[in-house]
Length: 193
Image 1 (cartoon, rainbow, N blue to C red):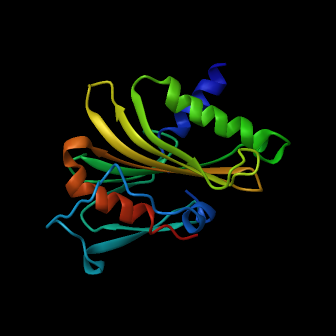
Image 2 (image 1 turned 180 degrees about the vertical axis):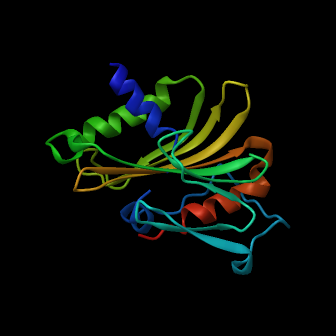
């Protein structure tokens, strides 16, 4: 039970793989609903993060990369004043490749969101209609942290045929969503394997 809870909590720290990125539609974000901002970042103001885990992402040049894995089993790209971040987690879960495994994992993820009262889920969708064959999921909503701060988030997870689960989570403090939401979405959707 504790291992299952740890797995579920670890999943929710993070967010996507190339399958999810290429095959999921870019849904209107609760992170940045219809946002326009004068704080835009151009290509000249971005850096590229080349992860040891085999992927690349672009991010605003003044943001901070933490790939130390010290604070969590994840890599982070953070806004300097901690108003927004993207977290990326990759781990092996061989249940994915077993009969019924995808369905079990996706149900655990969905239940983790819906049963945790600190989360309000606006949307949980799968790539495809069947939990047993879905290759990715996307969850959109809000989360209240232990200090009572409300964060808007988008989490995208990809389950590969080799048993790898990769999750990307973009989170923005609710009252900063119009400024940082588009930046977080741009980081997530810049993913390349």
